[in-house]
Image (cartoon, rainbow, N blue to C red; front, top):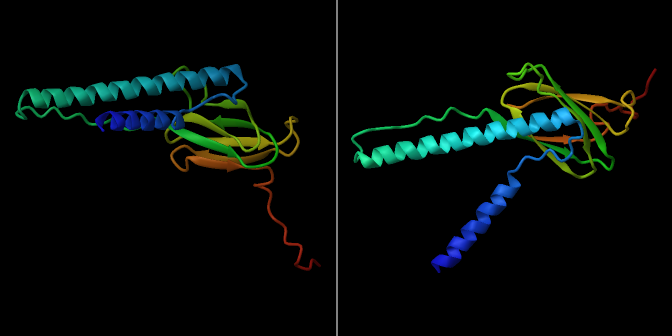
Length: 176
């Protein structure tokens, strides 16, 4: 019975790990791919450091029979996974531009994201920065480009489709 429980928990955690991955497979700009990989490495480093500190504080507390309270306070999140869903029937071409700079002086911009219909792009973003997301359903940048502002501290799921920012016109009203 215990062996089955261990296998089930292993399968559960494996599925959880696969679902929680961020992926840059729709990024086509080499600088954007490089920036995304750097953020993934930084996030991984922060997570490992936090786990080691937490386990270390538990070991110190257990070794001293609770006489030494070595509590570790988490620093909080520095990166957040954002999910961009293309719910339209067309491929969307997306550019995300921010005014927040990296330590190297570059902007946290993601350019030339090519998101196929009914697909999801999961990207890491620093927590609390605002981005202008420009998207269109044609390759031509001048045609039908739409813009929304997204804050990485807000919603994690962003649903995109062409025409979503165009104001709706009520044709039933009489115009004079």
